[in-house]
Length: 170
Image (tube, rainbow, N blue to C red; front, side):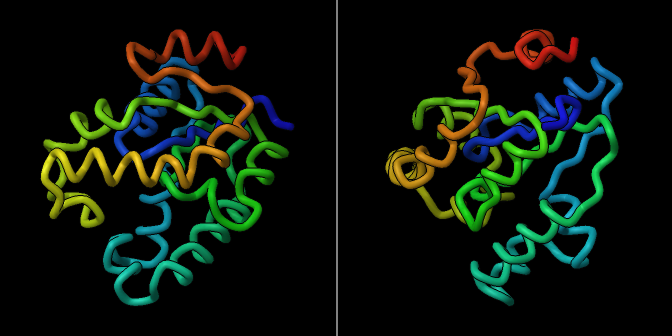
């Protein structure tokens, strides 16, 4: 396992990208947003790719992007929320770096996602109540995968300093 390769996992809105950027700035590591990397490769948004090739096509592309990318020696990688739940992605991340599950309640996630729903096609049509139900259901499906992470941290009040300390990279 490479201690200098860190994979941040968790549901959309948990703070993977925000914390990842801050942690990278603090440690001097590179920051990689896996979804943005994929969009750069395919020349369209994840949502457009999903519509064109379906979930199976996207998940295969996501797996290849995760497992075949040659990452810098020291990098913080924010994965998509579903990435750990398909193929052997979670096992692969655990073998190749440190994994951190940023855990938040469905209500907290819904509150965070409410303002940016328009940018997230998967949730754009939901009322606040339906959004909490959707998140609760998805978390139940994904939790077993997320719980395989080497570190599980409550996302409330989590900052780059605490994350670096837990990872031993401060």
